[in-house]
Image (cartoon, rainbow, N blue to C red; front, side, top):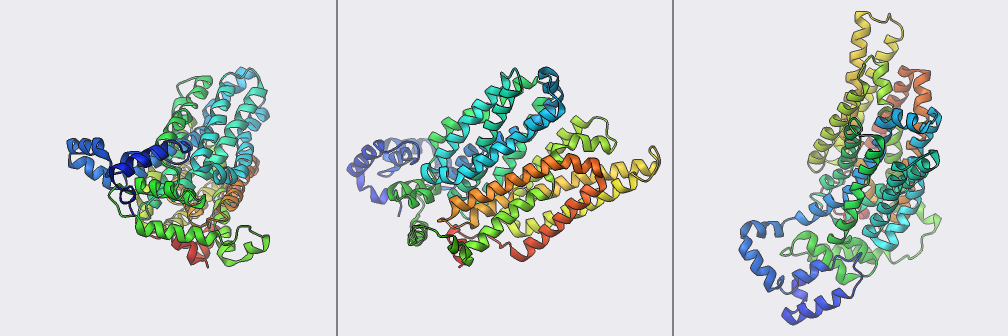
Length: 504
């Protein structure tokens, strides 16, 4: 059911094109249909002839989905840049604005507070104005927030900017994985979904890198760039076909899907499957609380929320946020350079996950990841316990210091290989379409609330006991492994509609 067959030749192409120009520009992606109708048009056909077979291959594969993913990935880069901003700027901001350490800690935590508010709104915004529209809304407060921080003369502008950034990040953290899952071919959905977390780690790394060389106000200005590029980029990608189908925009739905799958791809089977799924979800227009108890809703909701909460309870945000102080406690002098190196390791490991997700499968990577996290945290915990009971400067003390550093790096690698990216992928895959907006908001809110709790308590726990803190985090990782083995299904190679049906 390619839309070229529906256009009815040259006259049909002209009429379709003219009608498409009168439709809303933001959430259809119909400018692609205009190019493709009527056999893609004489002008585009001649262009394809001039470009030759390489352009023909480009047109036929899933490059559209890849390019769309790379554009929306600017949002997670913004997400990561926001997370990484406070680490290299702490001393300079405290000095320039005469802040106390507690005021700066409040500044750092306000992004989580804003993200919780954004998470509450994210599902409904993405539901009513589309995935693209919600990303555009998220980009605006991010830009305003960075400007407020860069021009801040006191703590009020600093705090306001951080809250605005957090609000935008809360929307981005839900919308981007959902959009990618809904546009990606089933054979590429894992790899493209992992780009979300890869972009977050890249944003963190960029904040660490630039933070070593530029003043904090300039660094805040640089934070504007991802969303400044994202806004115009959204006008050149199609809306999620599944959202269009749910909204009853059937012509736009098929047009968007055709663009994403290639102009010469027969999309009949996928169109019919999505239509059946949408029709089934419309049979009940309102959801009652009692309906959530049904297995088809309660199990995916429990899995989605459980994975996102356990991801944060592993302590990763606390470890990364206080990495510099942890490295100092382990005996490393140049903690900023070590933190940057940790960021590089995280990006590389997440890149490996992007490559492996559709090969090894989500469930296997989660099992490997959580097992590695539990083991490495036990090693770190034991090394700190031993250090606390031996003489500083002894050979064994140096060995334990090195062991704790290696364990921390191995922990970050293990986290990046599975638990960093895959919970967001699975959340976007398993939630049924008719509860996705509400359930997705709840799952994202739970993730940000847990992240805030971990970030706020990590410093207190570390001051209580380094070894004890890592032992607690290790126990959580062991519990996460059990949760994955008992409850998390494999979603590799299955359509979203097949996944939803499996919970019935």
